[in-house]
Image (cartoon, rainbow, N blue to C red):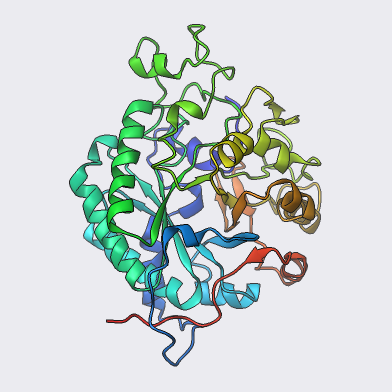
Length: 408
């Protein structure tokens, strides 16, 4: 199985039979508990700001430019410190939780809301139904939406990324298109009805390597799921089948579409520090990539089909470029600068006007794929931070300079 995209580390863990929290959020929302334990001071104002108002979901999409956000290791750096390093409050902060979530997980989410209100703007909440899609009911969806409405009233909009990477083969919700769509629509109906400041994001895995054979949760031959995924009707499930369309819940349920795109290096197994190929980001977003990672030109054009054709704002929920300190090869600054130059460069802005959110993966952590440490960050090292913050284009949108105050 070829490894690719930013979810590769989490995929490896699950395929090995280890139930793990995704690489983008090790420990899930429990990371926010450590923030409270440390007593970290907020960078927010010490005097009360304006009373928080609920921002309608349509207003979460910027009229011009794109929201800039972060998937942050809050163990290593609280949001206040990250905002100070960046020079801006991030517009989006990524959180993960199981679903339905426990009382402790709810408390963690409430702590996250307080921190985001002070030092950010909105939450991208990834819901992971680790007990399967059957856990999604009208009652659990209504309870979620009620909580979200409370978060919205406290000044924090929420974009719900439900059961991401559903087209993969490594999660309990994988490759079950009918059940997935039903669950997504159940959540969406509750959110749209009860939480006016919240929205829904549909976010499949990048389709390179589809159908990701060998995963614990792949659709088995002879099942109704397998038949539904055979979009070209040739009796086989291959990369020639549409890796996205069978899982799409419908325009009325989906507010945003998203796809995480990382530069992991030139080829599997990862670990060598390599410059990204020219236009790699754009080629993967449009299904035209053919290079060291393989020939992915059978893939649909995700941006054109879902951003333009379906008229949805497009998000990159997670992105970064691999630098393994022990890996040798190209220098860190050159690799990361080349990648952010593609993701945030003027060509991206001109070509993809529907791109409305970009979130950087700000973690320095052990990755099973490379059997060692990978530093994905751009704000921890002074020279990298200076180069990155200097390169931030004017079309990015950040959180407000003044925090609001809850009305109750």
